[in-house]
Image (tube, rainbow, N blue to C red; front, side, top):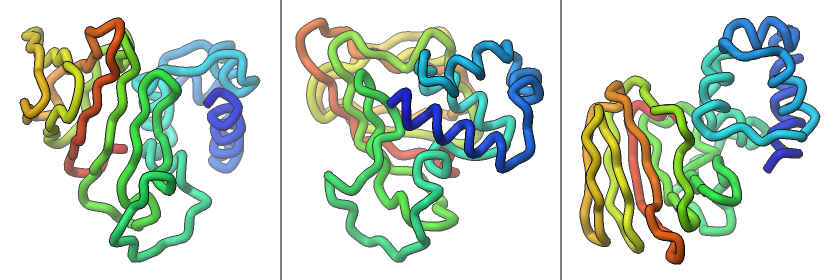
Length: 183
């Protein structure tokens, strides 16, 4: 993912006439961090990339699909859904080419011990999901739960939250939705 993120971040930053220094200042990171990401030498966590993109402003979905043309997608085939995550934590977006989506539906695949990063996530809206396979550790506003296949969750996304696959052996697959579409 590093090369793709590097090229896209550089393109988007330049398109919005932002220097590395200005984007770093807005996001509260060092300009060295932006430089390393754009060189493909480090791969930001989903949370860190989302934080950078909020300063532009741009959603993760827009970031990974901006070359796609508007369409009236009804069906999203498995191999057509862009991965908004990385090798450890995949976020496969349903309806990526749909302009002005009102909600975000994703198939999330957590490799063993993968998580959404050390920083808690928080954003506008509501989100929910159902564990399809494996186990999911969910932390919301300081409380932690362990969810099994068939278990679901729903909460206000403004509450600090984090997702983690606690297994060292099995992947965890989740189908999730959030509204408004923040990815």
